[in-house]
Image 1 (cartoon, rainbow, N blue to C red):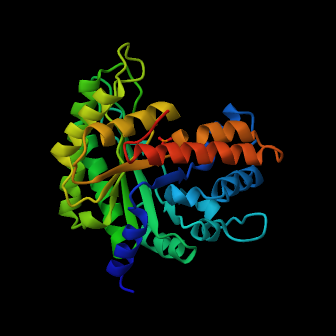
Image 2 (cartoon, rainbow, N blue to C red):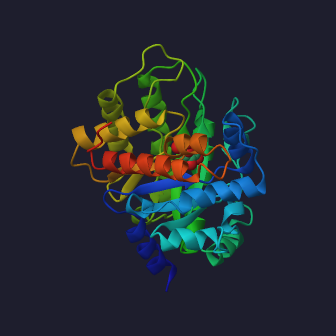
Image 3 (cartoon, helix red, strand yellow):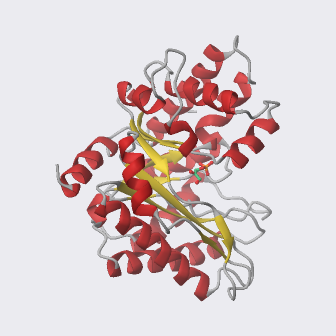
Length: 335
Ligand code: 13P
């Protein structure tokens, strides 16, 4: 198969009505933080057991079309010695891989960050493909302050995202393009809309410059929300209205699917907000679905707690959140 044929095949498997993506690609420091919050020690074995628990949840392939894994997980196995990418594939879930190497300060950009990992990326993609990955993810982050993100930060981050996406497509790996405007701060929803619009505008400009085929990538943006320390929080209809407005101004219709991150919203909030978009604003040019980490995993991780007698409870909790998120992607979520 040519890289383009591979991209088409992977897109068809990932973009399925009523399904979304599970982000289970927390880096080791991040999963260690999440485990610690619920009293689980983070070791290679607990991380393996936990990711195996998620991927072996019976029937979850009905709601989850793809899973983003962390590098360590690609080489791990379930209890019966099958590799975790194979376990996902058997459930009808396409395995993917986080390929960025996290953020660092962007000098001269007033505290804005930039994501690393472009050096050697094509060679790494070849290796990840051999381990079963068919799509990739790269995240850029943007903090909102009165002075951030800066024009330089917005431009530099867009350029890096586009270079990553072009490298993936050259190797026949579908890129998930993730520009995340963070929830932290006391700004209002209008300010988040303004920043998200500027960020997405620049990202699509850079993607065009790097000849990225928009039909053969996925966008993973934040929802447009008030800062989490703002006194006035927004109802799902308002979040949906602002989010769709910003996306309509910036995301070409050639993009097949927009899969939101949850970004620190509770599972119920993230799901209700996605639902409001699909219920109240039908007829958009792209599918609107999910690529949640915390909003799919939080209850499952807490009920597991690192024990072996709680695996079934944790799987039930994960299955439940996956079903509700899938319902929200059709506008039929009933909390
Ligand atoms: P959250 O849904 O927890 O924001 O995570 C999604 C993700 O992949 C962040 O990069």
